[in-house]
Length: 405
Image (cartoon, rainbow, N blue to C red; front, side, top):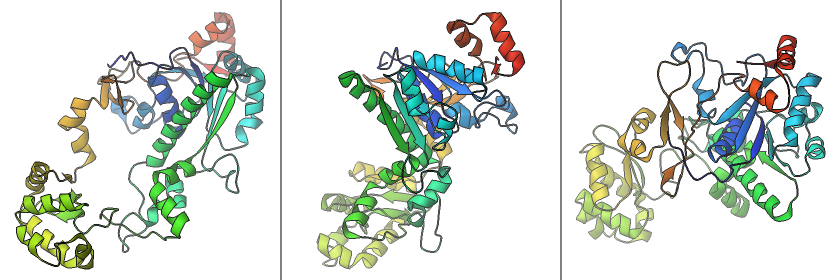
């Protein structure tokens, strides 16, 4: 475990009314930073990402849930029941942050709109996460990561003209939206420290996706560029950058500026390239990019990806052999950085690997100290804190309003 002294949100309470990926990932970040996160889950299966019957080694728990389930309390209740909704409202009284990621309009019908929540707690930071935002012509639509990938344009730039369209493999928009929401919440917390007011932040998956494509967005908005497929080539379009095939795999190289180009030629042992008038000057390289590319490819094709990766490293040229996720996760660098934290989880025979926050603070990793909870694991404790005795809790359990693990 990585208990950290870097806990800027220690003492903050978060009422977490989110599910699936983007919302829970945002509150996971808050939990890693010290906040008390009370995750409200339905009494049937809990978060939609919880169950995975095909994974008996994890007792039917999906890794999608484990990814962002740590450092949270699980309060399992039916918020559609008046008594369930009353419990949430009672929690809001002592909360600092409220996060929801329902389709716009849904949370209001349940009685938890920004105006409803602010009426209970006029200092609350309220975060809404949705597919397309709280306003605009698409605002009422629902979506998932792959749907937004289709909407945002990234699929028309990923791959070759022959293979288009292509989705990015990971649900990166979900996780980027979670990070964006955590950033927005922290910004609102700082603003509230200054003005003492409640604030609402509106975080959209599509907005977050477009920010991940900022240079394309700026280029398109400014000079009306219609971006096409980039394949495996560098965004710079430099002929000496991008993907090159070796004897045993693909190598990604970044020789964008003149210094890097000269160092690349030295690593390749091709001083003749620098003396060739077609390629000696940067302006000529683009004009003769096909022949330059062919000269580089012929040399690189003669040895292994690992050989060239080390050669380019020795000469100060950024390069990397294309690796699988399995290789990177199990490789020495991520292990040294502590990006994945192995933890025991009650009821499981082996450890689970959970992500840390993604940066170090004061040279420390910031990872979960509490494993993802079983559904309803904290229901009884939270209700007791709200003043309920065991007989009242048992009555609510029998009625199906709450669930205790």
